[in-house]
Amino acid sequence: MSVKIASFAAGCFWGVEARFREAPGVLEAVSGYMGGHTEQPTYKQVCAGDSGHAEAVQVTFDDEQISFRELLNLFFDMHNPTTLNRQGPDFGSQYRSAVFWHDEEQRDATEQKISEVNASGKWPDPVVTQLAKAATFWPAEEYHQRYLEKNGGGFCHL
Image 1 (cartoon, rainbow, N blue to C red):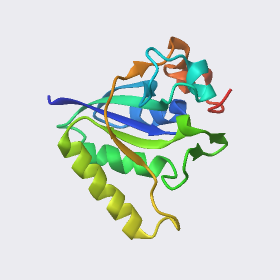
Image 2: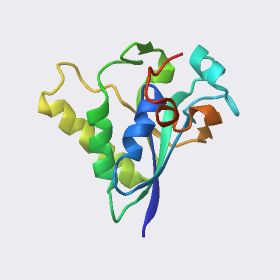
Image 3: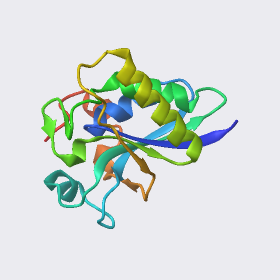
């Protein structure tokens, strides 16, 4: 087994976490916050836009079962990467599209994937996904973990 970590933001973390959890080779997906300036941010701070964080999901995966490239494919298929600070009814920088890379291989693969998505013509607008070096990941409060699983689905905003 070759265990690695990847971090993604694609709007509300509940649905993103659930989608990654379904992928074979994903060992764990945790909802949380990344990319901001506040230590130990709370959901209230993140939702208010005060912390600078994105709602993110940290994915632990077995690289021998699923590659980072396959995770990128899933990420770009699960949301609209061309809407700045917005996914569906959720808007604000906390809902931005982002890939937080953990090594240069992830950074390079993400740059290549963004170029491919832009060249594909799938979206009329260019990809605005933020590409940033992974920073401290703050797990969200317990009630956010496996939220859709525990609550039978539902909306991604309160």
